[in-house]
Structure formats: structure tokens, C-alpha cells
Length: 141
Image 1 (cartoon, rainbow, N blue to C red):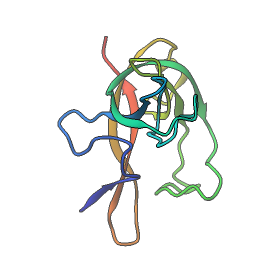
Image 2 (image 1 turned 135 degrees about the vertical axis):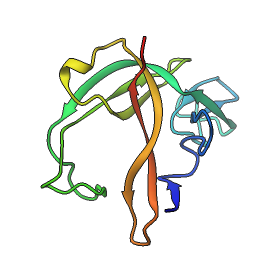
Image 3 (image 1 turned 120 degrees about the vertical axis):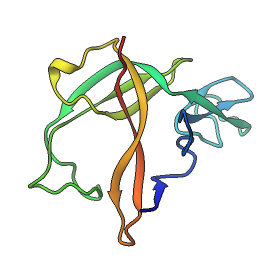
Image 4 (image 1 turned 30 degrees about the vertical axis):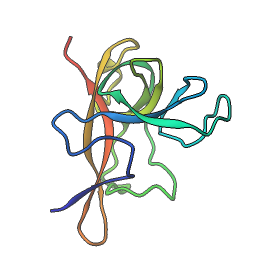
């Protein structure tokens, strides 16, 4: 089965150690995710794509207990839907990334816990290609 990223430029993949990719403004140094060609801080138009790393700290979280509304596309349907964790993971350098969390029970999540990037299947398209996305899982301390 072939696999492709959900969007080019979000993460390095396939790679032994995948990393999220962001952008850094060459004028003011602001770093953002996802990568952008313009700076949201100073409106500068000179940015570089930079690796943000693969590990971070859980900054905030919640449990999504209902299926997202359209135009959300996944392999889940109302019969197979399971609640999932979603939160912000603070990467080195201070960028906070919104992501699904593989721990999906309240007892498994706590603010400040170390997290590890994972590249996982999101859905399968009409041609049978697996669409890959990123999420974070708990990192053993």
C-alpha cells in the first residue's frame, strides 16, 4: 500500500526520526507552525523552513468525545468512532503545536508530560493510498 503525507512540508517523512517543520522569520526571528512564507509577527516576507524537532511537552489537552463535523475526512464513521485526546504540545523554542494525542483517557494525560512525535495513518483515499498525519504519544520518562 502506498503512503503519502496529508500535506507536504508539515513533517519530514519517511525518516528514521521524523520532525515537524516550521518557519523562522529572518527579520524578527519568530518561529511558527506550520511553515509560512510571511511572518505573522512582523509581516516580513523572508522566512526559512526549520525543523522543530520530534519531542515536546504537553501544554494543554482535552478529550474530543464527538465526531468532527464535515468536511473532516477520515476512515472513522459514527459506528467506529472512539474519543481521542487533542492538545497543544510545546516544542523546543516555544512553538505550540495542536495535535491529536494517542493517549485518549484522562488518566493517561497530564500537563507537563513529555511527548514524542509519531507519523500515523489518517485515512485511505479512493485510490487506496494511505494518507499519513502526525500525532503525539506519551514519552517514557
